[in-house]
Image 1 (spheres, rainbow, N blue to C red):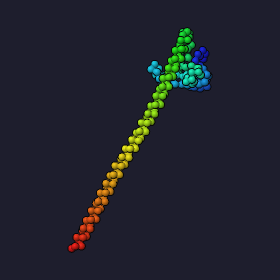
Image 2 (cartoon, rainbow, N blue to C red):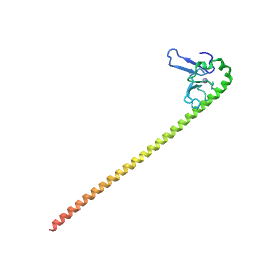
Image 3 (spheres, rainbow, N blue to C red):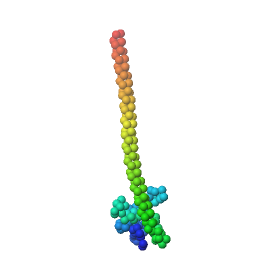
Image 4 (tube, rainbow, N blue to C red):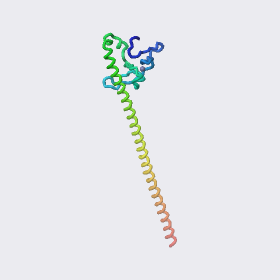
Length: 165
Ligand SMILES: [Zn+2]
């Protein structure tokens, strides 16, 4: 645990599972998932203030990055260029991630609208079905009324014929 250029990893000795990654501000770093083609789905940590360039401490590291990756002498030699590239790359990853998040929000909104539309359509269909059912019932009731009327007229005619005899 030494020579961290970008923040540090604090190991909690009480529980081996909890590994708190802190940025240069010594506060827990934010974790994101990379959306670039080079590292799809690879988790990374960065400074929680990455949206504010004046506050951003430029902390950046992959979730699965090995501890010795930054500490080998050969990588220290090119650290100046590496840092510049790393910073640019970090902002690229963050931009892609936030773009994907916005896209997800837009997609969710569209999906919700689609669902609302579908609900309206379903309502319309059930109203139509109800309408058809009511029309059917009305027709049946009319037919029954007509039948009763015929029976009544028939009865009257029968009575009249019987009365004439
Ligand atoms: Zn920070």
